[in-house]
Length: 295
Image (cartoon, rainbow, N blue to C red; front, side, top):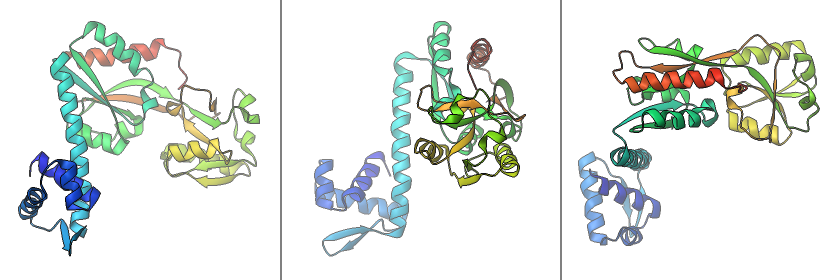
């Protein structure tokens, strides 16, 4: 199966109409039908069922289309990154981290790094932690940002301390809590707190300690985006590591009084021969040491 056949099958699945799909693809309907049958013969199952003049996806075809769409996106990204590398750069360093805000000083690091390594491209890759770990272990990425409890699970990796993220209370700027310089458990009495879901075990321990100390209501939050919506709609407040801070005035982040924090490390592959990777790690470490940024 080639890339054109992937495009043909995905377009047919979008339109569920052979004539319209063929028109969109600028090929004849018989050619499209031939290509689909050729792929079905290759994979060994029907992708589409013919029902009179109509078609519909088989259960296997439905699952197959989902996988093909991921392949199509990955292939497009791979081609574009390779084009960038071929035009201007001779090497690249792929850096994976879980959210855009997790490496707040990355833009400054890229800017500084380009002055001494103009032919090395820094490629940011934002992915959930589990996906990032999988990609790193397959050596698809060069550097991976992880909190200590995740980095400690990995064997035979180099761990480079980068920064420590504290726990903050997240609320709206006009909330009465926003006037405080530091939040305690007592300050949260009779409020509604977002808990569990996407929180790490360490953060859940802090949440449960607050719940055990003061009367409080709870809302389970599956992820950080859900949390932000709930806070923005005045439904609740939350406790969060500082790495999720957006650099804007929509929310207020106030330090929370607790001993827990989150040391973060850049993980690299051992015995990596690219000297540029070591240079980039040291540059990031220097920036975080010299920059006054609340994490």
